[in-house]
Amino acid sequence: MKILFPKLYIYIAALLNREEGQDLVEYALVVALIAFGAVISMKGLSTEIKTAFSAISSDLASSL
Image 1 (tube, rainbow, N blue to C red):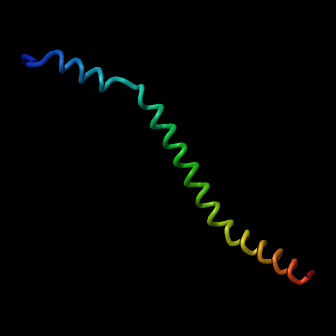
Image 2: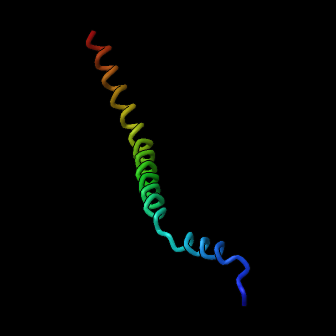
């Protein structure tokens, strides 16, 4: 079978074999995972932080 566009075929084959962009994708996935974990942990801690600040506020108000 004769290839009609040999330069185009070689170019596409070279693009498919390159691995340069894989590092960027891996780093982006790691950053997204860290961000997701941070958001989930902040949602879990927000009620505890709110309770602590409310207790501090009420203690300060009662001491005045």
